[in-house]
Image 1 (cartoon, rainbow, N blue to C red):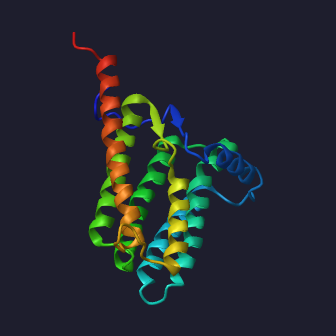
Image 2: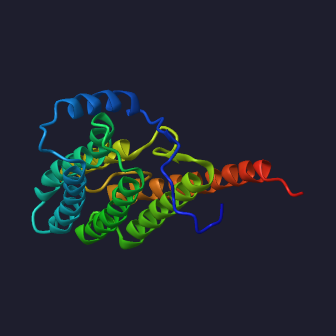
Image 3: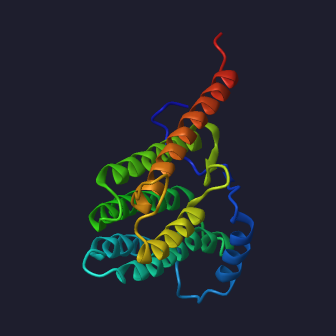
Length: 226
């Protein structure tokens, strides 16, 4: 197999986040009761719309803080579309593994750029924090795609945190920032999203480095020098 081989479907999905078990049961229930006209592609489009709309809501926050509340609803829509599309395909036995993998994650990449741009324009966080968060996300995403190709495992979460946990944290942050955009800590009053974003940057870069070392060591063990 060469580096130009087409990416195949992940052999094993690894999802060990805090909400993974309950979320799986809920999504399977929704998929089994979904109307016949609903397709996975429509759900993917809905998820992308929710993420783009959330970014727009953040960008409009300087004009009225109630946009933060609508942003919470858009993040919920993003969760529904982004999480249910693959489950619906599996329940209906209409999977297109390579197509679905590509479409889902290219939408995530574009949507994440829009989301971070919106937060940067909102005034809730400084631009460098948003840039750091986006860089951390893209680094983790790239590592995950490489691991999928080389190890046959697709990791949907990093430790106890996955996409759903991150959305819940953002919703909690929105509801808090709606009333208190700054927090008191050690005699200073940083922006809530600056504080949370800095913690998120440290976590993502640490997770990316540790995961890269672990996977490189595994591959070196599996492919020893002759």
